[in-house]
Length: 230
Image (cartoon, rainbow, N blue to C red; front, side):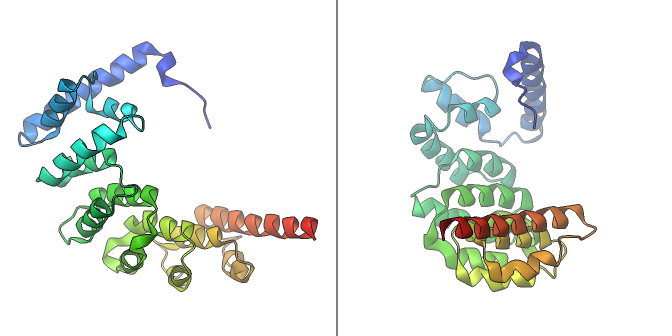
């Protein structure tokens, strides 16, 4: 992985900012009802200085107590999934059951675009609330969502939800969901799940092979720890 710091190249940063400005200008021209300019204006009136919307994320997490409620307000007012997908990335869900419930409901709406579902799932994964486990389980079993359920499989695995294990095992038979299932099962670090990883450790598919071997490696490390502690 590269350790290149983009800020070490001011010319590149400036070019990226100018490109974003042009893209935003076209976006606002195409979608004049966008609420993003109003959101930017409100933040600037509070003293925040930035050139383009993407820079607002740089104020997080230090200023999340100020920015998140404002972003939540605009998310609720937004009429398009395009705008919602921008605002949701600035919303802090941790400990806020009301907004978590609202995001789950938006995810489940039949007319919600998958790109917004992806953003919502990411925020809920980071919130890691165990209060809505039944909703997460329902979501990963809905076939119409497809691979966009990935954040929820990660979430359930991180919470070590027992009821999710048989669902993940069943997912192994679905090629589009298989990577998510292997990764999720691997997080449980259960010896009895070893056969499911061995099934794919030499598979032709590089992703299935990679994550199956990673899961097996976790099991081996766990066995080694037990031997050393006994």
